[in-house]
Image (cartoon, rainbow over all chains, first blue to last red; front, side, top):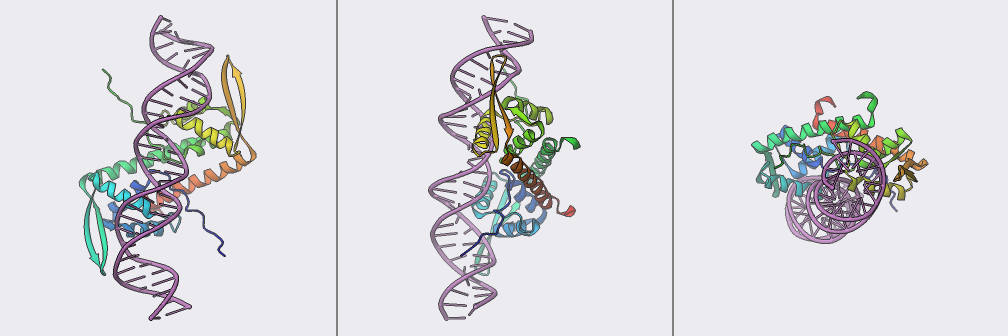
Length: 116
Length: 116
DNA sequence: CAAATATACATAATTTTCTTATGTATAAGT
DNA sequence: ACTTATACATAAGAAAATTATGTATATTTG
């Protein structure tokens, strides 16, 4: 028997995954997919879990948009795909971060109008 | 000829609409749909526009979930549907607001780890 | 040493939640 | 008269997740 005690992966509002990926790559120069999932888990103390079904398609799309470059490596006989920001990716990171800040401000105006 | 000068309705991250609706009803006791769209526009100084295609289905769903009660009124020969929180709706409002606060904290941990 | 867990990628089916487009109807402004 | 505002509604489509699988190698553990 198994009693589920986990908090059903507290909400990742749809639309913020790209921002997270770009920001992490902005800080860490180059990362591979699995590393990103672990980093997010670590930084949020387990609050947020990036699922593979969301992450890998997102990485592929960002690459297709020219925001990321890929470099394949073999470590311990296992494949790794290192992603890093292109020039446009760096610009887009700034945009996304501003968008996020704007969103947070907007939501606070709605949810906490006294502080606005 | 028409040159579009609008900022393509600055991002509403998917998942936050219910929070907004519940919070507004928590503050204003009872509101009707159109009123909600106007209130959001006002509070966010035009930054956020709730589309009808999103709002009405959301209201219907919240009602179906037992979080809202409806009361139909006729004002100036026009229909209005006033929504108000049920008891469960009030509880869920608190949950959603906590969820939002959590999300903002989480995103700040990711995007601004120096402050964490 | 067999089994389970961790590392590392990937994709398909489905669900959720929007946007866009359309429709109906009345009231008020120009 | 025509446009804009008020007030509801729904359908089609898009976007972005979740969930469920699948493959493969390495490491830990009982």
